[in-house]
Length: 64
Image (cartoon, rainbow, N blue to C red; front, side, top):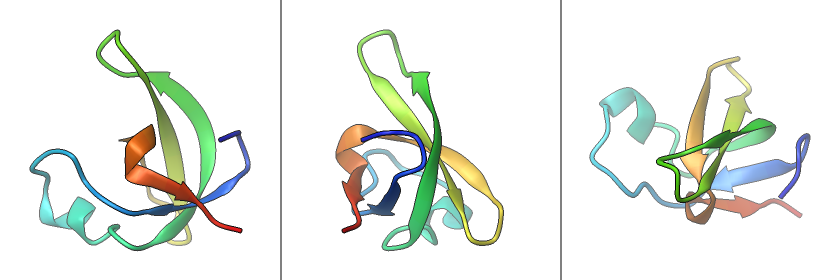
C-alpha cells in the first residue's frame, strides 16, 4: 500500500466505537502511515466525509 492509494475497510481487529464501525465496508484514501504499538505500521485513511482514522494493514484491502 502507498500514500494516495484507495482502500476499503474489510475488518476491524478490536472493539471500537459505533462511529468507527460505520467505516466497515467503506472506501477511503491513504493519507499517511503511522507506527502502531512498535511492532507494525498502520495507515491513516481519509473518507469522503473528510473524517480520518488509522487502521492496521490487515484491516484494509486495496481498491482496484
